[in-house]
Length: 256
Image (cartoon, rainbow, N blue to C red; front, side, top):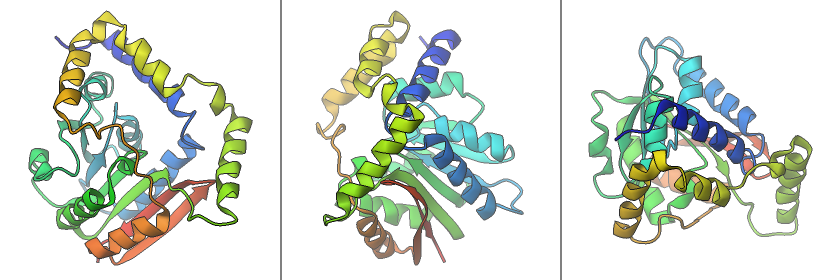
């Protein structure tokens, strides 16, 4: 049984608010990602985009408003978030259930042509370095020449005398914009799990978690420089950050 439209709208709206607590200048970061994607897809009649770790479709929904002619494939492993996206943002993307970084995960995407751009926001830091490298290699194989990966996330600075200043700038920015006052990650999940309308998809989520390696909630934040090293090792020739506030950054990797 699917999730009702009303329930999906409620929980996606609460998700959007909750995420402002964690992503510094989240809306601006979405806008920057959309600016980059729009520029890379200029003149292409039906660009193909891949949204990695799409959650309930927040980034896909914004991209399709900017590029209504685009086809977006959105992939995630969480049954709850995928069902919310399929219901609330049904027209934004084709949603795919797959575990990014696992062997042959790209087969589930059923792509009919090369990607123009792959995007991600606040998702790829869950991958340890070896899985991240293999994911980057897979993306090089999926992207057309001139295509790119555009990744918005929190990238901790390298340890050093200035490292705490980066986090401090982000925290102060969140305080000024009120992000720290919003519902947090844990309370969102507790409240959503108590909604009878989501009972079926939460049962699927619990089964998925039991079957996983237990690393699904792990956090492997790597500095920007380490991501750049892995991207170049995977085959991306050109890697650069294009926007940053505190440790929130948009990193672009271009394929020749």
